Amino acid sequence: MKAKVVLILLSLALSVPALAISNPAVNYEPDDEPKYGQDSIQCLTNSSLYREFFKQWKKSGYRSASINDAIGPWRWVFLNCPKASLNTYVDGTKIVGYLIDEAKDDVARAAYLDTLMMVYDTRIQYFGKEGFVLGRKGLDRYRYKLSNEDIKPSYDIIAKSVELEGNDVEYAVIDLFFRLTIDMYKSDMVEKDLILENYEIASNLIDYNIKNNKKYASRFERVKGNLESSFEPFASCEDLIPLYTKKFEQEPDNVDLLKKIIGMLDNKGCDDSPLFFDVSVKLHELEPSPESAFLIGKMLYNKQNYTEAIVYLTQGLEMEDPEKLETCYFALADSYKNTNDFPNAVKMAREVLSLNENDGRPYILIGDMYAEAGGKCGSNDLEKKAPYWAAVDQYVKAISVDAELADVANQRISAYSKQFPTSEMIFFHDYSEGQSYTVECWFTVTTTIRAAK
Image (cartoon, rainbow, N blue to C red):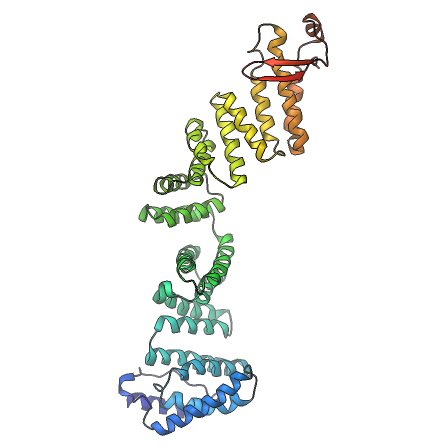
């Protein structure tokens, strides 16, 4: 009877809009209340009445005036037989939401908003499913907010829903959960740490549902896009590395986590960090692949650890992505060059050109190796200078396919053209300018005789 008394008192205490109901001063005791209240006939009559008008309103696309006839009997059912049907609350949120939209001033809106929150709370008390209902409550709390000061109350409700629902969370709830986190940070309500913490929570829940929730996977995919774009401005290497270091230490064998860490650090340009290297090595250990080998090889290459880089980069050549392959081949070419394995370096450089004929870098690389042969090949002074002709040829090719390399290539052309044989030397060896000449060294190429400038 206690609950009944409270509800009657509420009905008598109305002052603002006719439907606005204050929160009860005491807790309901659902088990003491008959399903259809103290007057079951009146309960069923009002329930049937409001439902008929409500259905007409719904059928009209929530536009017809029948809603006005539904409000009174619905209110009677809500106050007098709250256990009668779940529809009382499902329909009630629509009814009170309509009244909020129609309210003439903020006082009325605030009163109706309190009533809407009470509808959700009463539903939880009588029908349970707290986590799910709190999600819907939080969405409406935010939807009908009166000012930015309402952000925090909406977040608190949504965050509790996320905590209780876990992997069963609705996609709209997890989307708002993170958006409110960002809004609170922008309003100086919370520290940036909460963004990082909640990103992890939201990201894990989204990834789970994309993989396991076939019905709504595509919607979770869209939420994931929103999450990543919202997170982008707030994630720096300084922020991410401590966060993911802790995660990595906690779950070093979690392949999905390792891939996620690598992806995030790579996207944010944190791929030169020790953490990125350690995670990549661990992932390759647990799940070897050409891609993971490539990542490790690229990091070793950037650290100028060329000998070890060659081992991993060679494994990376099994990748199918042309862009990654081009990078892999070039890193291999430069690694072989730096370990003085020039023949393999040239071979890898030519593989780069087979993937992208407009990449001028391989020509620069080959030209540099040819130039290093100057003075080291041949048995006479002209033969020792002949490699410079071959080197300059490569620099010219670099400019022809990639104009952005013109400055770099022209500097080399200028420097090495001065190392060409003199006109006298060319004449002495019974050659003439413009004549074809085959350079014989660790490489064999045909070039054109030119005099030093």
